[in-house]
Length: 495
Image (cartoon, rainbow, N blue to C red):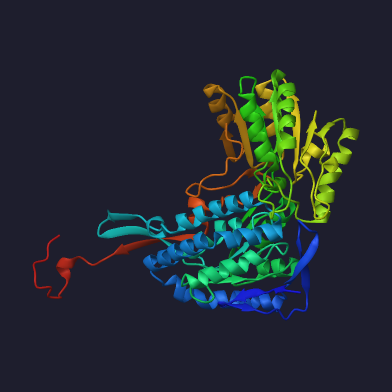
């Protein structure tokens, strides 16, 4: 069986740990490969390669770094079908979802191509007699990305594009559930002219993560995943003196006001809840129906659900694929099983859908009359389950969202500009959509939630990414009065 190995110092490196993990095709349920699980020594080798490469890369001109990123961007575009196919085979995404992931990842590479403009400092002449002050941005050194299974191409690009462009060297620890994309990206970076050791990939599990968190040569760590793991990453990394950005889970609410276009809102809810099988941190999990809009909205959503074609990525007409593992599918199913006992109503049960016989499939599901305190409301389900909560007023809807422990993304659907403006002011959530169900910022802004959705105070990618991967150095300089110098410059000295 094929083994997916590491990429260290510019080449695929076979593992010597003796440990491997299974990599499944979620659409068939069959194991298709084994992934190496790194030893501490293998992690150390990757960090050592990155450390050795740092001085040369850090001293590489900004124009040369930008040139490498431009070449990489073109290679990713020319190989986008190959990358998308790997995403589909190992994650289970249908072609449209895999293509969308690539498109958003490419945006971040394009942002990093403009690095010469983003590393400009400031200069103040004559702050005192003969004294000038200026600031410069400099890279940190060896930085690490620990990325989730649900976006094996895009989320690494959120991290390493800016990290490398700003002059750092990078060690990626991808999810062991869908690791192949990481090696293809490493190869494309090498083809783009990135020097050996600047980008490294360590496949692995908790052993690799814990070593990276404590390694003395690692300066910073970026993480995207569940909240419990994000908290562990942040606590352990900062305790070891590292700069950490750790993005956690979500429970994204979408408010629908009585004046909203119900057909538009229903379309948005269906696409935002069930795209990528609900396995994305910006998926809409809760629709909050305000006033008397609940019954019409539930009917409109229900009418659309049978039209969603569930199938493998090899089916060109499939609109939703399987979940990542059998265990995760069963966990998501348990929320459907437990909802009636808590007082909720299962309107559409995905367990009863006509699904492919093999693989980790679950049909689209809808639960109505959900309330705070229920497991299906409080927990991040991370699957194709949409819940509906009914409230009487706008204020109740806002309080519902603000009182939830997560604060990643939210949206409001309304025709009232005043209500929309008030909502963006009132809501305690990091990313807000107005008639936009999934408000993921474009690459020249930054991505990040509030509350238990993030640990640390730095968002990911965009301007915040530049800030995270650089340190500001301020220089205060004074030069002797030129009129006192004895050096003959060949022209008069003036003040």
